[in-house]
Length: 158
Image (cartoon, rainbow, N blue to C red; front, side):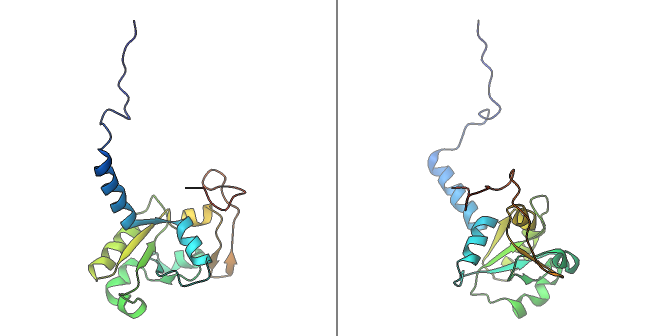
């Protein structure tokens, strides 16, 4: 006699394809990832967006995305217009996936009229994927973490 065991994965059935397409299209309107940002910045042309690091000055000095604008979340209401153009989309990041600072910064920027996306993975995954970063002491780079990024390939193929 066989017993049927309901999979926790399917205990709530998947959404209908059209509903799923709407959901994932919406998700991509709000998020991007470090690999796509790095590729756009490395292309050598205007990427069409500005990157904003929403962390503290101490965190910025530890390491930040090259070319990013430093605008901590608490300063956004007072300083965004000084550093950002409302006609240029913003990609914002914070420490990493365990931090919601980028989401708070994205909320503050969107309330001020900016088009904004959150860079999933934040600074943690920027470094874990082996991309170069700037510190208070100059440029730095670490080898890609083989558990978080493709090793020996330009991208993950996704």
